[in-house]
Length: 417
Ligand code: AMP
Ligand code: MG
Image (cartoon, rainbow, N blue to C red; front, side):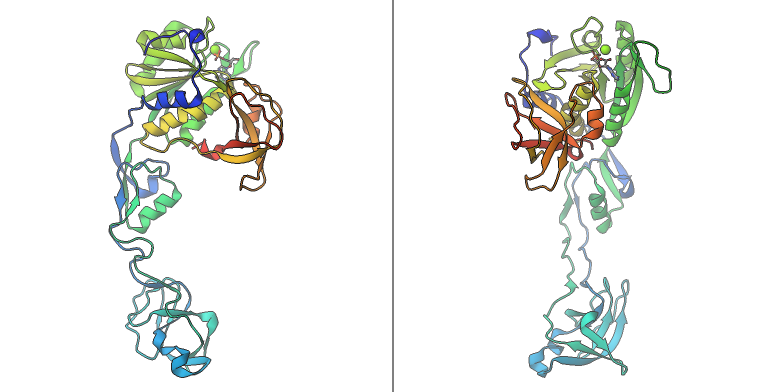
């Protein structure tokens, strides 16, 4: 990489910039074994296979009576009801005895179906008589209400692929096959700092010319949701020495450095110069609105992503670029968010070659019929828009939006974890 003057560069499309970024990822390789209970959000390092059938044995899907279907066939008896003696009672967690031919076994949901039985009649279709016999309404479909051994998972089946980001359902699935520990990649360590002489932390009074450091909170929130360990370096003043020191501290402790601000072309933008002294940096002009400038480079071989300081630009560029980069570093393969199709309930002008990401809210059901409203104020400093919205409405390059147009929408659920 070389330093290049942003003003002389052509603009990258979102796809070009993302592909460039992802081509630079060297995913984490350190693996640790973690109790299945602690794996939420962690990335599985190796595929897992089941050592057992699930369920391990044929069992009842209902509370009722287990029978051999040949004993309840109406053809055999010519009656609408069949009366059988109840020979045993099988509750969940207990293995019953083999079914005595010509009898029924009282059985409960999850209990093993006894040898010799192949059908469970729901208790709603049965009447227990005072003589201890059960009267069963016929006809009964042979084989009903039995969950067969291996119906969910067959022994040796792959249950989890390498690169799976563990969600609650994956934790349950692993536990259903008895897996107590799972091999996951170690947590990614991400160092963050925010540049700007104007920044003050919440809790401090604001003096003239100062603003609160909101980007630090947005970034730490993003990173925590992504399961990263955060090395929080705080505010870094607009000064070359201080910026260099912060970069070195970050590079010593982290797998990735993310910074806020100081990457445009102003005199007080030191991130670019400081990174260039310690490593390499490229400034990318990306054809998006909000959030045009993005810096990418490395300090002592540690990758650094420099996000723009405007709070909404930072929010959008984190979602579009930093998040997929982090997911890939964590060992995931599928890192691009999936958009849905919805109908614009607003009008908006084109921004020439720039793709626009408006903060919007979805109304109504899916099937492409949901409508999108946008926050009325879409300025790159208006953080309120991100709190109000539930996703980003995507306006393609060189396109204006008319009410009723179909467009893509990126729900925050695709972007925030
Ligand atoms: P910069 O990218 O440093 O030129 O900053 C662009 C704009 O974003 C300026 O108005 C800054 O005051 C604002 N800004 C920069 N950093 C932060 C931050 N950490 N929190 C809130 N606003 C910020
Ligand atoms: Mg600044």
